[in-house]
Image 1 (cartoon, one colour):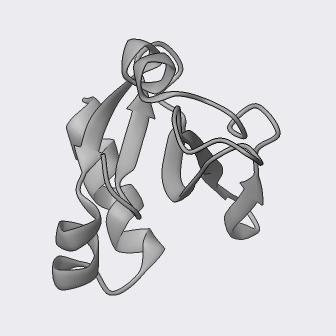
Image 2 (tube, rainbow, N blue to C red):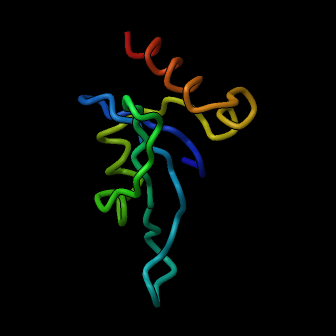
Length: 93
């Protein structure tokens, strides 16, 4: 799991992007993951930080989500979020 990786929820097909890794104050172990929900609506592409994503562990995310696209692939091969969502539509079908 790396920054900007995109994951798809196994049941709802919601898309999340890994934003950062953090540790709790006064602790150097058990890093937590902060992710944001990314969605396409009639008004365009939207991204909202998820309160549910703050404090998640790798195990929690991997139990509920599957890796859709690495952050490296996202940066190298896609120019817009519309391109990403078009690819997502193909992946889900």
